[in-house]
Image 1 (spheres, one colour):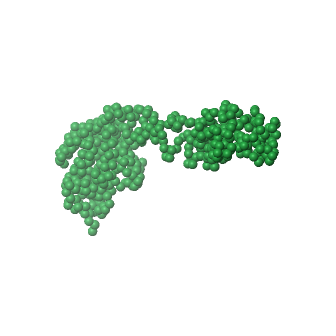
Image 2 (tube, helix red, strand yellow):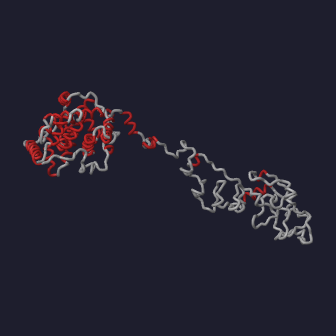
Image 3 (cartoon, helix red, strand yellow):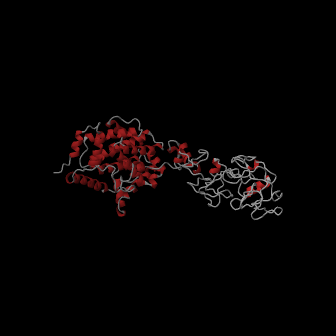
Length: 530
C-alpha cells in the first residue's frame, strides 16, 4: 500500500512556529504544488481590484507589453524563496530582486500588507475547497509565520502578530478598497487574456469564461466584467473536485518538490538550469511613467532624460579608463605601450621601416643601423654624433690620439699647400689628419693623397727623403689639444687650425646625419593624441 499521508504525519511532528519554513515547503512543494500555483494566480488577480494597485501596474506598461514574463517572474521569485529559504543565498537574491523592483515605485504600506495577506489566505481557501485533503492546522499557522518573516525582509511594516488579526485586516481592506476603475479593467483584461493564451485557440473563449466563473461578485464588479454563462462555474468546480478524489486514491505521494523547478516555463525554458534569481525581475521604470507613481520622481526622471553621452556605463563611472591623460600622466610601458613611435625595439618594433632610423636619439645599434656615416654600430655604437676617439678618427680636424696625435695644426691642402713634400701614404702615415676616404670620409675637404697629389710638391721617395715633420711619439709627446669628449657639442669646440670652417663643418655634419637628436614631447597629451 502506498502511504498517501506520509508528509502529513511529518507535518504533525513539526512546530508551526519554529519549523514554519519546512512545513510550508512540504505543503506548497510536495502536497499541493498545483493547487498553490492556481490559488496564487487568482490571489494576484484579486489584488487588481484595488484602484491604487491597478493604476500603478497599468502605468508601468509591463502587463501590456510582457504579461507572461511578469507572471513568471513573480511565480519563480516566490518559489525560489520557499524552496531554498528566505535566508539562503538564492532566497536572499530573490528577495533583492523583489525589493529592487518595489523600491522604484510609490507603494503604500497598506497595499503591500494586503498583497502579502493574499499569499497566505487565498491558497488556504482554495485547498479547503478543491484540495485532495484539508490543510492541517500546522500548515495554516506555518503559512502565516513564513510570510510574516518574508514580509519583514521586504520592509513591510505593522504586520499583524496573529493569524486571526491578519485575516481580519484582509477582509476589512477588501471591503473598503475594492471599487471599479478603468485601470482595474485594463489590467484584468490583460490577465484573463494571459490565462486563455495557455490553451489552444479553439478553447480560449471557454477559458475566458472559466476564469470569470471562478471570481466572486465583488471581484466581477471591481473589474466591470459580466458573469460567466450559467453552468460554466458548476462544471469547472465539479472537475476540480473530481481531480482531488483521483489524487487522494490513485496517486502516490510526491518525492521531489516542485518548487522553483519549471523546465517548461515559457519565459525561462529549462528553469532553474542555467538561471539565477538575479536574472529575473522587471526592468527599471521608463521615462513615460507619471511622477506620482515613482518613489523618487526627480531622481528617476533625471536618470532617463539625461543625454546618453552624459550617462557613463556603471563600470566606467566607478573605474575610470586607465588611459585617460588626466588620471594617468605616465603609463607604464611594460603594461601600457605608448602610442608614439619611441617604442622599445626589443619588445615593440617601430612602425616605420628598418631602413629609416627612428626619431628618438638612441636607437638600438644591435638591431637598427643609423643613417649617419658613423663607424660600424656592431663594434662601436655611437651615443651622439661624435665618434669615439679611442677607436676611430674623429670627424673634426683633431688627429687620432690613439695612433698619431699631431703636434701642430695641420694646414688645409686645398687652400694652403704644405711646405713639405707629402709622404707616400702606402708606406708612411702622415702627421696631419689625412684619412682614408674608403672607411671613413673626413669632415674637412682634405683630398686623398693616393689619388690627388698636390701639384706644387711631388711626393718624394720615402726611402731617400725624411719628412721635415716627423710623427710625434704619443708616449712622450701628448697632443697639444685634447679631443672633444663625447658629451661636448661639436658646435662649441673651436677649430685647432684655420682650415676648419665651423659654419661649413656644421652644415656638412647636418648633411651627413650628424645632427642634434630631436627631443620628442613626452607629455601625456602628446602620447595619447590629445
